[in-house]
Amino acid sequence: MVRTIVTVVFILICLALTVIILMQEGKSAGLGAISGAADTYWGKNKGRSMEGMLVKLTRALVVLFMVIAAVLNIGRF
Image 1 (cartoon, rainbow, N blue to C red):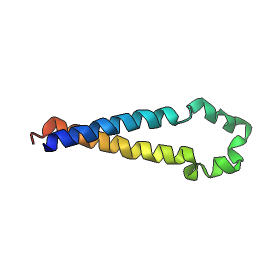
Image 2: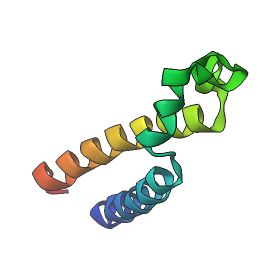
Image 3: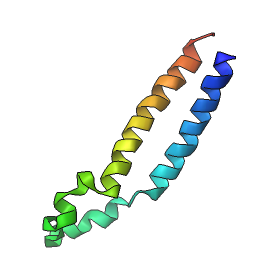
Image 4: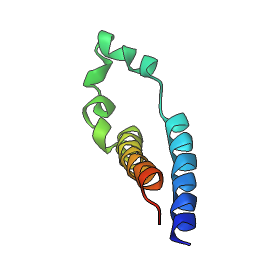
């Protein structure tokens, strides 16, 4: 029963990670920094922007993904 619940949560995290990663901008969008575009408001406050939030959420979900993957692989509920 617990293994089923953890597996469903794992699948939901996988789907959420896929969607969040696809929503993020590509690294080529950051090439404007060469011409000085990084000095804009969005360049200075990237951590507070939608992109910064997506990066933080991705990191948190990746950690959860790894932990749950290890638990499902090692543990025999």
